[in-house]
Length: 301
Image (cartoon, rainbow, N blue to C red; front, side, top):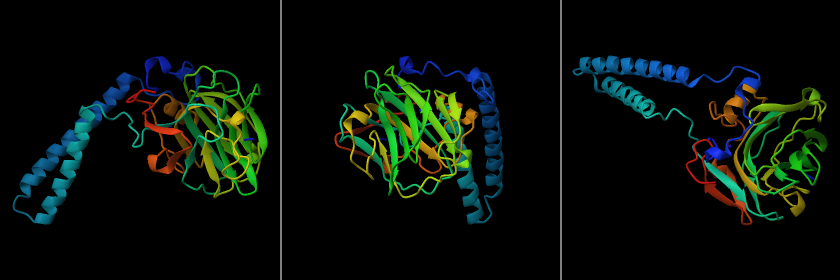
């Protein structure tokens, strides 16, 4: 057994509901613009002060003058960014992994080893193209002696399942409409508490899922296939077909407000354990990597 808005307006998840999610709602656009104007004003005031200081230092030591010049240049760059509206998040590594057909040889592999974890949140953008039931395995994490350390799987007509140390929780998530969806799963070893979010909304939660079991380190994380042995023995019937982007992993449970911010592309975060970076993800067997910013739509899906 077993990470940016979607690129086109029609692909926006239909279920993102700010008012229904716990935690404070993101600031309204007018409030955000007001805050940006205020910040820009503060930066400009600082620039003017530094300009005066630079003039006063015309006959002072060269080192002190260079320090002022450096700070002034940095502030002017920041003002330029604000003026051009680039305060919106733009991930440094905007790409997706695409698996076009169901098979047992196309997948992505994360090149970074995980530490021992006592809690985690995994968030990922997914677009399934399975065309019906059985969405397969968006990701699986195996360690020596346990192939199913962490697995997200939907097999056949069964509901989507989260496996931790071979223990199973059924998740009320659905990827069947061939559209981009944002999925977040949070878990803690304390009492085995788990929460599952889709498009920013809490869809389900529970407890006693592998309670008091720490996630073992130094395993292998695969995108798109379920591992029956460490790093291999894939089953085509359990493969994911579609696109995967912005897979991020944290060593703690994100708050509902943080999850909503990521799903709405208003408060994006990169995983503190595993960020979505091009250098950390390899594609194998015919799976492809392509430029894709899921929150800005800079490339076509």
